[in-house]
Image (cartoon, rainbow, N blue to C red; front, side, top):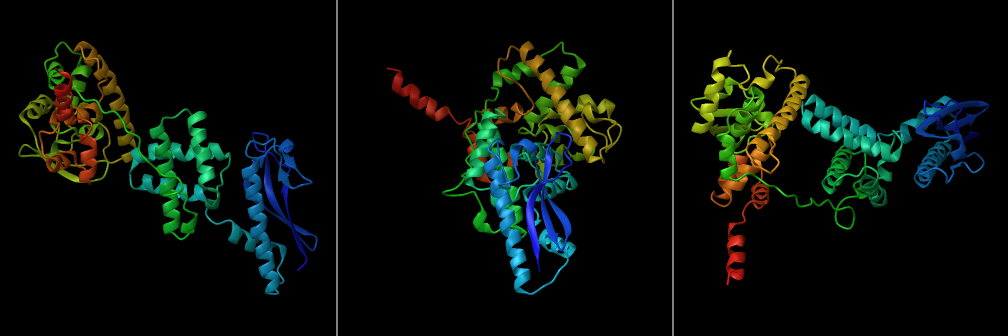
Length: 404
């Protein structure tokens, strides 16, 4: 079987003026091509040495990729020769493609994103899709073999995120978590050998940075409660924020998507958007007064309680998610005005309602009860969250030392 293979730069450029790299397979004067998914400019390609020139910013990575592909192809051809198989150029191409074109990282990543969308996890989808795109921009390719994602590669990606994209340390961690999730998915599916896993002891360790959580105190919340002379939009924002706070900091999306049918005998029953848990909470008297204000516009059990999503088709997940996201943005804008009118210097957003509840709860409530109120799956999560607000004992200890 007299055949030859060579990596070449094809002649037709893309819209960016870059040319595709392809594997040329020749046998008995018949030629076929397998495109490798990478594009480079003609000036960055050394046709004699069959490699990317150093003028290309990712020359080392791309050359390593090409060498790996050639080695894989060599093993395929050697195996066919050993088996004395006389195959045509088309058959040889199919044999090579079926072996070397296994699912790569971005293919598995797309499956992961598709699953998020099909399961209506749209909030997570909106966060994770840009993180996958960050990796595409870093690699400057639509293909990324899992074997290339090693410690050195990830350190380079981390540096890129910090220096080029100017993201926070928490954002860096979130990007790494998506890569880890997709890598684990590939391992579970048998696409990748676990020994290639680049995370863990002695490799890339993911540690969440400490974040500062600042909530309002009782005086500040009282100022919001008694604030008057508000516009209708500001009054809605105030009511929605207070309703969230009164019920242990229910997340903004969950509050906006509450329906009258979720209330039975002064109790609230609802599904959490974040993890689909079913929760039941008694509605405090202050929150009942807010509901009374909106009962005048109630149209039925399937009607949304708060006005921002009225006349929205609640069965269309994408429309509902988009409108909810837009509504939260508008509410936060009005909360900023409310904070200024109330003389509150802290930044007030819908999420701060949750922090404010934690700040006031402090160490007054057993952590097991707080876990239920926060709807945390793990008590460890509750302890870590609440540690941001439990300062009374340490403050008293400090005062006892310095007050002499």
